[in-house]
Structure formats: C-alpha cells, structure tokens
Image (cartoon, rainbow, N blue to C red; front, side):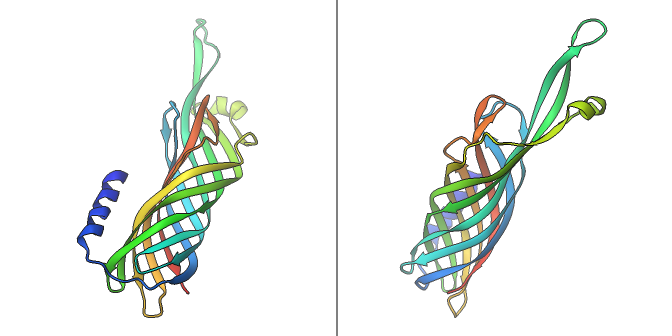
Length: 221
C-alpha cells in the first residue's frame, strides 16, 4: 500500500507542468500521527500509534530543489504476542500462558532529506528522501497475560536500559504544499521511516523500528 501510494504521487509529479516555489530559508512546527511496528522479528505483532511532533526547517535553493531537516519527537514501538511455559496441570501436561508485550520507544529524530517540488502557481507536490538519525530518549516494556490471575503475579512494566542509544534510518515520502504571497508554506505529507540498524532484541531477534506518519505543518521565512 505504501509503495503504491508513492508510485501514484510520482506519476503526478511527471504529469504536472513545472511551477515555481520561491527560494529561501523557512522553518516552523509540524505534527503528525500514524502507525509504528517492528521489522525483522518472527513473533506475531500489532502496530501501535506513532505520534510525530517537532520543528522542521527547509533551505529552498531554487524553484524546484531544497534540503529539509529539523528535530522531531517520535514515539515508536509495537505490540508483540507470545506465550510462556510455566508449571504443569493435574495430568502433568505443561501449561502455557499467552501474553502481549507493549513496547513504547521515544526518540528524538534528526532527518536530512533532499526535496523536489513541482506544481502550478502556489500549489506544489513534493517528494523527499534521505537519512535520519534517531536518539533513544526512553523505552518501556509492559507485559499483560491473558490469564488475569496469572497476570497479577507475573505481569510487569519496566524501563528498558539495554537498547542502542542511536539508530540510522531511511526517511522518504511525498506531500503537497501551498505557498501564500508572503512565501509561507502550509503542507500535508506522508512520511515513512525504516531503520537501517537494530535498536535491540525482541523475542531473541535484532529488531528494527519502522513507522509512517501523516503530518501537517507550517513554515515561514
């Protein structure tokens, strides 16, 4: 679905005749939400809410090309299912207790993406891609067992201290921009991030973060 969305927007890029976006430096707030999940793990998982908020900056060198950066605070993670063997029943058969682990990971993310803009007049379609570095701010893991009685003595919530301090990610996406006569930009974008390095182990596997966010923002000169 993500790939099809990006391909469709790229075709729109080609179909539009070139418009002009005024050069200059801009910055402003951004906010978005989407879904986060893990890559490279075998255990069943469900995505969790990802919220992205911060300040974006863009240096527009000419009408069509610019560089974007900034600082965003992003919560990542996932809900991972598993089971634990503990004890035996009356007949000596092992007992299994299913659970769900909720991983909440917070990062300060600094991207550096190249941006191409095309469009008509004050309306532009943009595409962007580049690397990003994320710094782990805090991380927690909460385990909830399906068996309420067993969960009372075995469920837990704890801070994770053995994760990597930083991770490298590929950041890319597309969006639309509207420029007013003063050169201020309002934008709506789809941003995707796939970590290129592992943040730590989940169920014995070196897991990597992944998320997408639909973000809105405002930039002024």
